Every structure is written in C-alpha cells, then in structure tokens.
Amino acid sequence: MSETTRNVQPVTVNLGNAGSGELVPSRYAVRVGDVDVVLISDGILPLPTTTMSTNVSQSDRNEWFDSHFLQRDMFDWALNIALVRSGERLILVDSGVGDGFEYFSRAGRSVMRLESAGIDLAAITDIVITHMHMDHVGGLNVDGVKAKLRPDVRIHVAAAEVEFWKNPDFSKTVMPEAVPPALRKAAAKFVELYGKNLVLFDQTVEVAAGVSARVTGGHTPGHCVVDVASKGEKLTFVGDAIFEVGFDNPGWQNGFEHEPEVAVDVRIALLNEAAETGALLAAAHVAFPSIGHIAKNGENFRFVPVQWDY
Image (cartoon, rainbow, N blue to C red; front, side, top):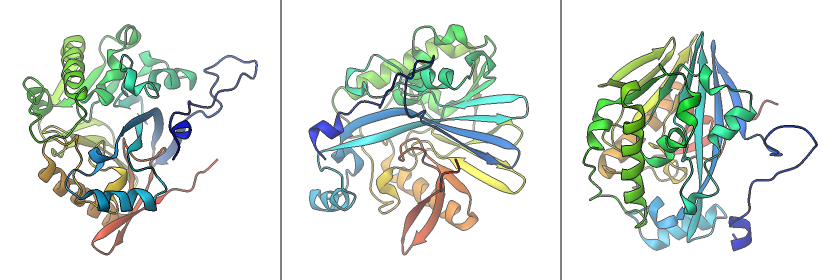
C-alpha cells in the first residue's frame, strides 16, 4: 500500500445541505431480536504492524500482511464503537479516541458521527466502557462532551479496570513510545471527569433488558465484552479481545495486551463460543462494520462478514 493511499482522508462532499459533509456515513445497524445495535466508525489508527504480532517472526508476519494486500510496516487499524437501544434505554459502548493525539488524526469522529445521525447525546442513558485505553474513553474526554450528556448518565466499567489504571503495568506490552503516557493521561482524565457516574461491577452486569457486560480480562485486567441477546438471537461486541489477525492466528499476541497469555485464551474462547452458537460478533478493531459470524477453519477460525442490508 502506498504512502498516498495510507494517508488518504475520509471522503467528503458538499451537497448543499447541513450535516457533517461526509459522503460515507460510517454507521451500520442490525436488529438482534427486539434490540437495535448500530456500529459506528470512529476512524482509523495507523500503527506499526509489529504491534499486531509480537510473538512471531517477521517472515510469518510479512506473509500474513502480504496475503491480505497490506503493507508490511504500517497497518490501518479500524476503530469502532456501538450504540444499543433496548426499550427506553440508549447505551453507548465505548467512545473512540477523542482529540489531542496528532498521530491519530484520522480518528476521533464518534461524537460528530453520532450527532450527524441525529443522536442527541443527552438521550444516552448508559455507557459501557470495555476498557480504559484512550481509544475507548477518549471521546468522553473531549471538551464539551460531558456538558451534552445527562448528569445522571450511568457509566458501567469493571472495578478491576478502574483499580488497574491507578498504577498500570506496561511490562508485557509492546507499544510505540508515545502511547503509554497518553494512555495514563486519558484514563486519569476519564476518572476525574466521570468518577461520580461510574457504576462498577465485578464479573457481569445487566445494563438493560437483553444487554449485559462480562469481564474477560486479558487485553487489560478489567476488559469486558458486551452481550446483546433477544428472542434467541445474540451479538457480542468483543472490544479489543479480537483483532484482524486473530481469526487466522488466534495465538498471535498483540502489543497492546497487558496480559498477553491470558488474552490468547480469552480470544480463542470467544471465537469458539461464536462458532458454536452461530452468534454475531462485532469488534472495536475489525474492519468496519466488523459484524459477522465465526466459522472454524481447522485449529483456527474464519470471519464471515454479514452481507450489508441496504
């Protein structure tokens, strides 16, 4: 992939009407029983390919990226959030990276895209944070966002996650040098801004009818996934438990995983679960809209994206 292609900006168009001006709205909706789920792209995070596979050889890594027509040194990492409506509850799952990160200038579009879709931030009753990395809490940290949210918004986050970020351990991670300080800063700001709104839970919590969060650990000690189940149908938003390379190579460790060995076990368990049940799966860092089924492929897995209904 050429340098020009990698740095391309979102396609925009001026059709003479109000709105964001984006030609592609970057949102996709599915219905799970009686529950509506919308996946929204926050944009793209360009990162070194080495962070996608820290426990394998360069040749193995190159082979995978070559086979997917991707360049070998930098990888455009999708960043998605979700919006869930269950009855009278409107639930935001993660918030994107926000602003203030020059090296992530192609992301941070969640709030703009929610508003361009006609979503009033004051209508959000609950927020689930899969984990407190900056690309998941950063959107809430943007100046002016808190004032648009309702004062009593409930923010569900695992107690283990909040505890971890009081003194985070980066000893097993492999990240660009600028990232750990930014992660610490974003997590601290999030707690400072929203500490009174936090609803802490240990293992699982029911957020609304048919919508629950469960702790998996691995990526971070308090990382959780969000299960949507209604009328025999199910979708799981797996946060950062599964990455693009993880279907073909679930044992490959990611440089952003604080507990990489545990993360591998979590990843394989979630993939097996989806393959066995036929449930839909969506993820923060799988190409938008990231919704699909999981099929077994020998000892590994195959991602089968949904066919867009439009």
